[in-house]
Image (cartoon, rainbow over all chains, first blue to last red; front, side, top):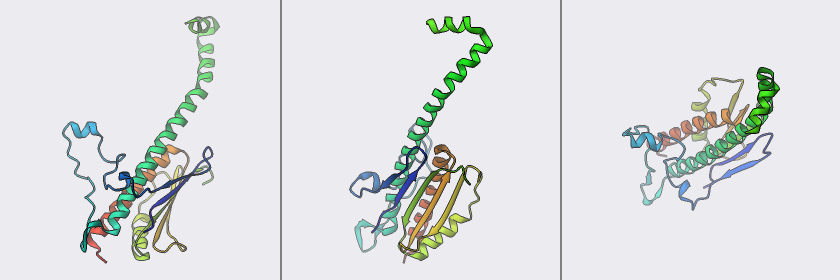
Length: 124
Length: 88
């Protein structure tokens, strides 16, 4: 069977592809790492009632999942890959914003408190 | 939408066109809550038989992550339902 496949693009990253590695356990489970309740919530006693069902096995061969179960497991892995990648990208964008904000913030402080006070701060 | 420069295209190979079209119809009914910052288009591929194509575009990675993950979770539920109830 062919597997799910994704391509990302942004002004910073022209192309990033997401592919399934059929041997990797990440693509052999219906339980995603980046979806569902966090470990913290689960450890606090929450029961995950929306948990995806386990893969369904082929009636003629109980060792092999059905086509749709295999597709579901692989897409779950791709969803995790995409979520982790985009979370990292969000972090990158956040750090950029902090850097851009800093000079503006300094200018604001200069206006509000005058130069003398800022010089004192910078000595620390 | 000219400012939606963060894009993701996902190909999901269903077994046949009937299942891919069913998933497309189910997904297309969901309204987009903030169309100015996130858009999605679902289509059944003409080149790849039985493949659902989801084309997402957003103004930033944050909007893309929220929209894509939510849509993929819905598609996973559709696949789970088909697997359970539609034994071809």
